Amino acid sequence: MTNVYLVLLLIIAVLMFSLAFSSLSLAPWVPTRKRDLKRAFKLAGLKPGEIFYDLGSGTGTTVFGASAEVGVKATGIELALPMYLFSVLKKLVLQDKNAHFKLKSLFNEDLSQADVVYVFGLPNTLKEKLVTKFKKELKPGSRVLSYVFPIHSLVPEVVDRPTDKDLSIYLYKF
Image 1: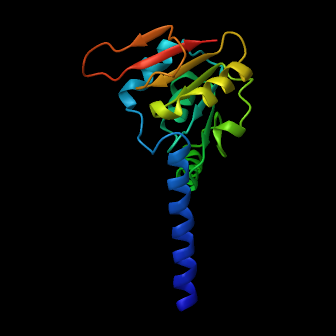
Image 2: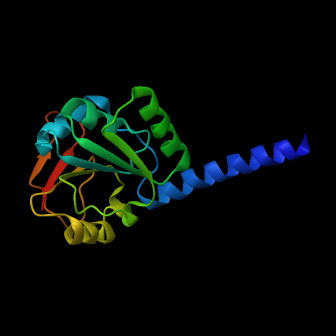
Image 3: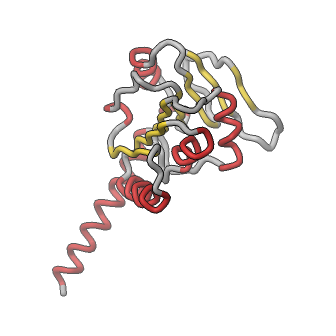
């Protein structure tokens, strides 16, 4: 019985470490408000058939929204094992063939095929390393949506905040 407890404790420790480590990479998990998804997709001009990436996809809300509402091939990149597993299970339940998830660091994902990239990161993580990755990998015409916070050293094409109660969405074009 002691071995069962040790294995369970080890599994919990690995999951907690994964959550803590991923929050250092981009941000702790804070979900995008569902009511802001349509506004974000419209701002980006997201069209059926385009390729959409969510960097730090959490439970997959934005990925499933882009896939279902717009009809794009949507990929979520997530570093936290519990969030990734939740997204994969939700994909199985929803049987969404256009939603995909990868358990990896966003810095190890090739974004060269992306039409739209969505990111909800903290200001200190939206700095040079991410900007360098975007400038190096994104094809001309790609769009980046940053939810709530601006991306350091980039000038947004549009800042969308219809009312004081709304959160800002920043649109960048490459």
